Image 1 (cartoon, rainbow, N blue to C red):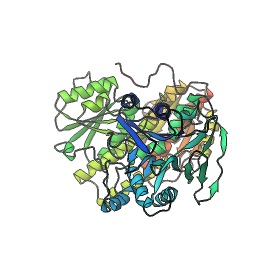
Image 2: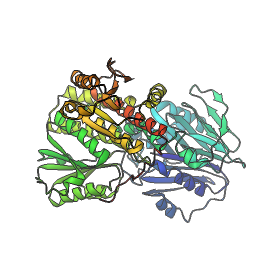
Image 3: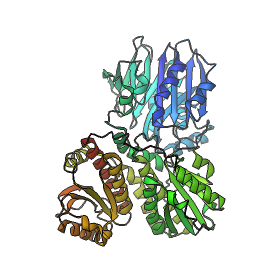
Length: 604
């Protein structure tokens, strides 16, 4: 996820910016850059890949005078991870860094191009700096031009901007994306999108509220609210524990990552949805020429997302789709026909078993596609095509937001293929696209929901096991819910299709068997309800997750009434993640580092 730093003062600005960006590496990035304005001259540097590449580029650059500097780590959304697309972005006399989304950038860019502005990048961010410089020509001050610019952009943002005509000032704005400011003992001003870059420099910081904007110079921090009223900064003590600060106040990285899912799904959708269809600029449409089957291959959580995809591809795209466990597939001498698109899924892009199956498919002459979270990973380099999930760094070993973004990508891809194969009506395709836009809201965690699950979790600490059950695409979600609980609580849990209970597993039913039942309103509700009633009749303890009250449940977690079963899927995903988290916390386990597990499995 993108990160911002800024500094105004007479210390070593370059080093402060570089060190600050290092503290944001845990958020994930694929390029980085800084811009420093001193003595009315800019020096800017950008590099793709790790920060060591940026350090190498800046090794001969030193700052000794009072200067204004801004820096950024970028996780690609609009445009590929290239130096041109890296921040800071330049106008004729200004530089800007930005986190978030400028939703109306396309129309603003069109107007600016018509005015003769030349754009160098594919990003939405570059619009900000050119719009500012356009407004500066008709404004009485830089600050007035900045205010005009903010009034014209729509979306979410955290912005830092510096300009030559006001060389000892940094302009800032925050709306929907975090940012804070601090002062050191010498009067230096520091900005960041997270606490960690300021630790060791500032003892107190002020967190901006949505709608806040203003400027800092040598003498003041001027903050204005969304109504243009000047306000005083509210300074508070800055925690000095960097690991704790990285967690942004959450108890565990896993908890933070569950809460981040709304943001990362928004990033996953960014630039990939038009009003009527899904757009994957990274794919050549000929990738699907001559393809009559899709074969998905993955391990663990990625296998569950792939299993979800089989329902979506066959339902939307009307194409034969199968899913394979990578660790088994590579040893069974599979038949691989060249009319098959071979798709591998991996959070890291380095999962050993999955990587080997990709090599097998390449050797057999199949077209290959990777769904991955890490650009330039082994799978990305090897496959014919790649779709990045944009989940950001996931530090919790038990995957949450990686699964969410993988399923989101598969949903989009099923609609993309449906358009190519003409298997959905224009009206249904548009409805599905509109549903996708609603996913970020469906995964937002409310305090009420979390507290309800937290209270409930104390009833599920003992017993001889869990069944997670669901039908259709909720069966893969049941598998994933059971896996999450196993990974971090060390309790036995199994995921089953609801209809399979009577074919054997129901023999285990008794009060000490906990059944977590996924009961979506819009998909096979009555059949799923009947299966749960069978377990209830055998005295299994039932926890129903549903928007519909289920009178035979011992516990009930109410989800929202949603327009479609896929939105119910994503909301229930969050519920099972939090339930696993809270059970594990009560058991005293290290949620982020469960025993015996590694984040990236690079051995067989």
